[in-house]
Amino acid sequence: MADFIITCPNCNHQFEPGDSMRDEIEKELRGKMVDWQKKKDEEFKQKETSLLQQLSAKDEETRKLIETEKNKLQEELQESIRKSVVTDFENQMKMLQQNATETEEKLKEARKKELEFLQKEQQLKTKEEELEISVQRQLIEERGKLKEQLQKEESEKASLKDQEYQLRLKELEKQLDDQKKLAEEMRRKSEQGSMQLQGEVQELMLEEMLQSTFTFDKIEPVGKGVRGADCIQTVHNRFGNEVGRIIYESKRTKDFANDWIEKLKADMRTLGADVAVIVTQAFPKDMERFGEKDGVYICSFSEVKSVALLLRDALLKIYEAKKSQENKGDKMVMLYDYLTGTEFNEQWKAIREGFLSMKLSIQRERDAMEKLWKAREKQLEKVLLNAAYIRGSVEGIAGTDVNLNLLEDNDPILLD
Image (tube, rainbow, N blue to C red; front, side, top):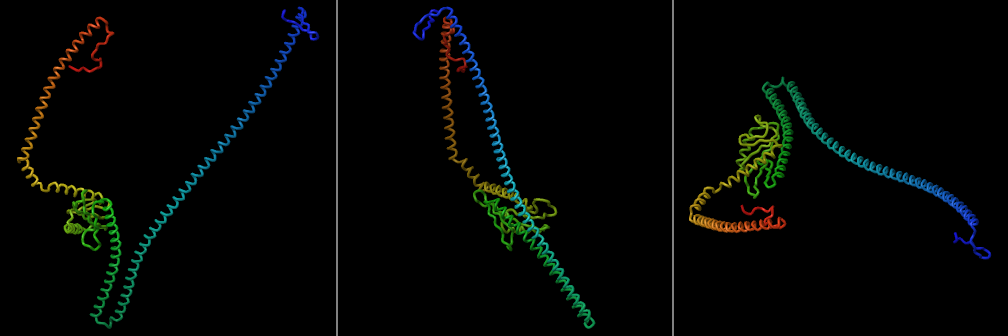
């Protein structure tokens, strides 16, 4: 405690305090120190409490701000999703409405076409009925006129001779028969015109189908009124050579006439065709589907494409077979003369001599190489044997630390 010195504030005199004063000063200083420490602790606690409150307030404010922003973002996201869903739904609805509109328009167009077809069909039926009614009306009128004439003849019968009366009656009967024949002819011509139109349509479809299927062939339609088949197909191979002809007769009637076959066979002979085909809607009584009858093939329109492919392939094969048989006898004689001639004999001798010389040379080379291999094999065995002796001696002295193997363990054995 000797270092503790008190200085007078008036005269600057320094002196050391006594023990009692020192104790009192230390006691006072300790009290002040304790009070100051308590004060500082209280201030620190107050500041800590205030800081904690401020932090708590800040945390609450931050939490509320985060919650507010979170709710705002969630609302914006929901609004965006709702707008996207609404937009997609509106687009889908527009597309569905557009498709429905297009479908409705197509349906209206189809109904319109169906209505037009039904109207045309109804008009055709109406025209047929009107024609029938017109024919019946003419018949009735003619019968009425005939009846009037008969009544008139009856009234004049008394004044006419029996012979003249019979002649007049026969004349009137003939007129009635002529009118009936005329009406029947009109009806037949009407039906014949419809059947002829259907037949011409089938002929055109047959020509188009053949032209589109066989682009390398020549499809020639026969003009209307010209004697012969309806269509002629000239078959060409891949080199453009003509290999045969197929003629087609198109029929679209309810009944099959057997004289069609003889007529088409005559046309086949006239035109120089190889095959004849009748494309018909009605088959003969003894046939139900595609077949051959009296040298003529008969099929339906749905079968004609397959039939044409088969017949065309058959013509191509027959042509190739005929082509390969051309000048066969002359070729055989020429081949025999060549094989028995001097030229072939000398050439074959030269080939045989070259073969024997080559075989002898190969055998000599093989013998020489085998001799050389045997000599090298003996040399190699001698080297391996001496190497084995040296290896044994070294391993007996130094052990296995020195590797004197000429071959690795995995190396293949060179000699048996």
